Length: 133
Image 1 (cartoon, rainbow, N blue to C red):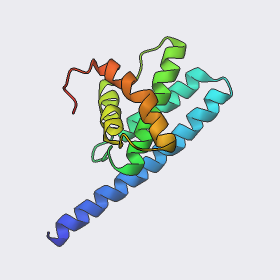
Image 2 (image 1 turned 135 degrees about the horizontal axis):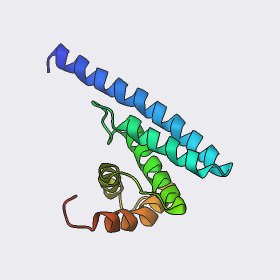
Image 3 (image 1 turned 90 degrees about the vertical axis):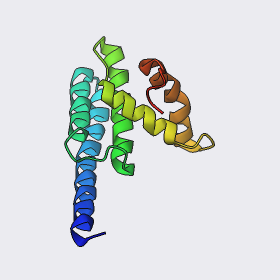
Image 4 (image 1 turned 30 degrees about the vertical axis):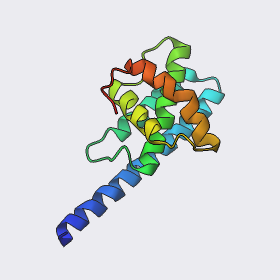
């Protein structure tokens, strides 16, 4: 691997991490707004976080960005249902489904609970057409 390729890889990883930090902050803000009863604003902020993760060059399956993506997608889906609004984008649903499927079935703790609670939901949203493996 050339030095140029390594630098490109590092640059991409740093960019993904920075954007993941921004998305994480937006997720935290959305949670606080929801707790304060400001659900419409919480939904807008969560959507902004997902939009941030959709920027060019972001590896949405990197650990930090993936965790933010999954958390924000769940937040958007919950708030959208409560408010009678459209949920997360198709791409966010697909990527979240892929992340959940990548979690080990034998995982424990919050990771296992999230997988157990949300994997069937996202599979149903996709229609489990087999398009995502």
